[in-house]
Image (cartoon, rainbow, N blue to C red):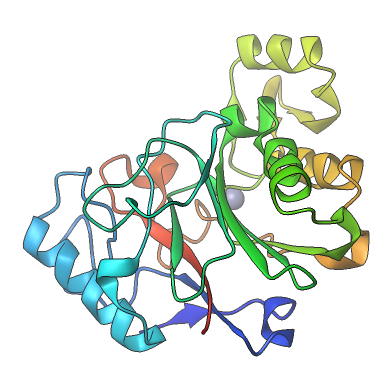
Length: 251
Ligand SMILES: [Zn+2]
């Protein structure tokens, strides 16, 4: 199983984390092979098997994993006792200080974001595509850290895994107009009379505006659409699986 680990989060020995790729699962085409999403018409037994394989690779119990019914919102959910693998909450970010509860965000072009406050020992994961970036879900996550867990933004580390790059993310003129209204047109590139959106540029700006230190931010900047051999990409393949970012505090 080929997974990727963040140099920033690797500094913390009390964490388990990973970004998955397409590799190492049992799903068949077009979900080959480590598809982790149940909602994309893949065989449910295969998806369950993929989750079990990943859990065994990273050494956690699948039943305790909390994932999300992601809806392109800016909603942050504080993980509670009722959250478990069978009942994913509807939201686009999860946060907890509980140990041995793996949090998962699933993507195919959107950005998988992992957060860790080493002082308060609090983790969060977030899903941000164009809508999450336009709605500034990052700010809501940092706000939840500081308001619920008494975190200081300066202590929070953030890593963003593979996502669609400005090389491939062509958008229509209506998105350009919307970006302009939100003062986000700095993240639109014009090439050959077309518009291209740089989501990572927005996320970086929002993180810095939320007082996250630049040296605590890591962006992989690997384009899922260019590398659809390695990652699931909705833009490249339409019918496809989802890969994941996972983060857990160990007991
Ligand atoms: Zn690309």
